[in-house]
Length: 249
Ligand SMILES: [Cu+2]
Image (cartoon, rainbow, N blue to C red; front, side, top):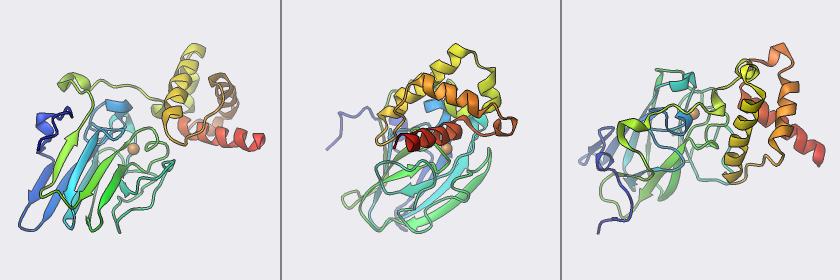
């Protein structure tokens, strides 16, 4: 039976980045962090927010070769995670032993690679998840499905990619630090925060309950100090938010 309802891209049914060895019951996945500009470069092989599902038969060996292409000069990492709510802001406990790359929170820099291997010995839905602060909750995750029914590994993708034209760079909030923040106009700052806060609100469990203007005022205070300018904007927002929430309690 074919799942015709899903807009599966022909080039992803058996993609070049998946190598199957039926005899050894093993599959090798090349997973590239920030492969293109999708989701503000927060993607694996061009997919984020669960748009990609890699299906693997139960009991097969999965080897993952991870590479950070490093678009937008952001670090990235990869861990196979149990789908938890809320998603962790950073880090993450691997669902299978050693199913994670080195420097999970700090991330691998542009061009860096790391590999890991595990046996998919339990059924279920897991996540490919980036452990760098803020990336996973921003949508840098996809599905790994371990299935008793599957006879061969496969990939399903959803979403609305339009070929080569889809690789436009959306400069997300994650590309900013204090220096970049200070170069923005008042209007740009509010627009950036509004866009992020309305998106973050959609994420399960992520609580940024105040108005963009509140966060903007706090960020101005935060980045008033020279020694904080290197701190990424997302990190600053999380710290500020925790601070406000504690005050409210
Ligand atoms: Cu990342």
